[in-house]
Structures are given as C-alpha cells and as structure tokens.
Image (spheres, rainbow, N blue to C red):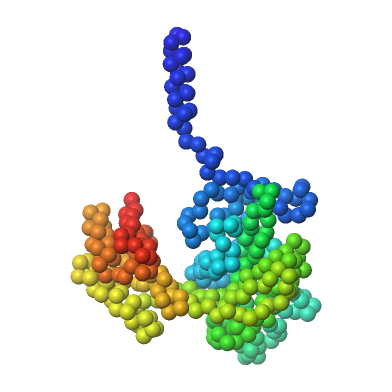
Length: 386
C-alpha cells in the first residue's frame, strides 16, 4: 500500500512538472484614472501582440462606453470595420505600438454621442452637430429641407492609447478620434415612403467635417481627465450603404495636449477599389489584368464557379492589400483540396509579391479554404476548413 501511495505521489509530481504555465504570458498594471487610488483599477497587459502591426489590448472591465452606437449609425458593415481598423492604423504613426497600449473609448458615452450625432435644436438638443432642419414640414417642402440640410455626420469613434509610467502603472497618453462623414444622405419624407438619396461632394463634406472637428476638440478639452491629452483626428468618408467596398480616410491632423484648436489637415491618399469594375480597370489596369488572367485560369480548371471578386486597398496609388473571393460549388473534399492546390499555384506564379494577398474560397455562405501571402514573401499559407 505504501509503495502504491508513493508511486501516486511521484506521478502527480511529474504531471505537475509537465503542466503548462500560463502565468508568465501576461502582466498586470494599474490604470491610473485619477489622483484617488480608490478609482484606479487593475488591467491585464498581454505579453504578446498578434503581429508587429497590432497594439497590445488592455484586458479590463472597461468596455467601450459607446458599445452599439456605431452599428446604429453606420449602415455599411464594411465601413464599420474600415473605420475601426483604419483609425488604429493611422494612430500607429503617432502612438508607437511598442510603447503604447490600446483601450476602447472611455469618455464619449452612448448618451453623449447620440446627442452629438443628432440635429442641432436650440431648445431640444443644443449639443447636436448635424445641421438644424425643420422636420415638421411635409411632402415637397420637407424634401427640399432635407436636401438643403443633410445629416453629414454619422459617427464619432474614440480610441484610447495608454503608456506605462515609472511606477509601472499605465495612464492615458493619447486619444484618437475618427469622424465618419456621409457621401450619400438617405432620408424619407414620411414613414413608409420610399427612401430618397442626396449625394454629398467631398469638398462639402470636408468643410462640414472641419467645423465638427473644431467643436469636438473644444468639448473634449472640457471633459475631466482629458483636458491636456494629445488628440489625433481623422476624417473618414463613408461609401454608400450598398457598396461592396468600404470608404476611406481622407484627412488627419494632430492636436497637442496644450491646444484646443485644430490646425492644418494632412491629406490621406487611400481608397478601396472593387474588381471587376470600370473604375478599377481604368485606374489600376495592371491589377485588373492580373485578376482577369487569374479568373481565366480558374475557369479553365473549374467551370462551375460564379466569378472572381477582388477588393484592393491602395495607398498613394500603390496596392497594399488585395482580397480575392472565389465562390465555387464543391461535391467532395478531394475536389476542394485539388482546387485549392491549383489556386495556390496560380497565386505563387501569377501575383506579384509586393503586397499582401488573401484568397478566400467559399461555397454558398461557407468558407472552404484560405490562402494568405504576406508582402515580400515568396511562399504563402494555406488552410482548408473541416
């Protein structure tokens, strides 16, 4: 019996020694929110980020104070993703991911945002940032009122960037604000009536966005705890609600911690382009031709497909990322594997390696396979979903 017990202890000891240790993969830090220690809380800082182009995200109990607002305000899901991811991307030029940590917005609450995003009304909503309009009018008069005073502003996205202090706590060191503006204003003259659409030029949009940005900075400076925090501002121009590609950022500027005014804007030359499209063919003929050849090769191997769809992200006229979707109907796993191998060979031989490439092979609404190749790499990564 003693030998049996002793043997059990040895097994437990050995297993304990082989057990994974998760304790060193993260660290804790105090979020310094005020001079009152009772208002500070502990957050977990992940030891690793997903890649060099990502921030380490603080894990704490403070989720975004405006959760759900963006989905109610921005109609196109692609615009939502690009607004959030693009604002982080531009923030990296101001807040280095090696020394800053990311936290969702904590100061612009849903109550604040819904007031700011509504129309201005001297009595009912003096906080409104969209133009005042008399919505009591009817029929043609209401249509003219809406056309003359469109709701330019869709959303204001806040992101917080924190940095470690000498005592190993973390404190807010920068804020990024994304101002989402419409390119098309959709409205109704009465419930049940068809929607009407008013195009908004980029020049008109930028003029309105500049005034909104000035007011937003003034209001932020009046908030407790962020009166002297640097602010990075960026303007995002949405696409139409039915667009298959998202809009893009068009301008940005930095406001120093001791400033309450917006200075000169820096133009951002970015765009998301759909292929096939006449604009894509005329503006980026080389990319268009590559996708046409790729589609032709796919069709010669597997005629039972719909069409190759490409979405390119361009910066300063250069392709930075190309996402390709191939919708196909498969009748077996072997068929899928063979097709994916063939498509991967076409990727390596037909696409330049100076931009990131992602190929999604789908069947109906199901993802079947994924091919990814990072910029500058000769080989790629292939995954077949089970």
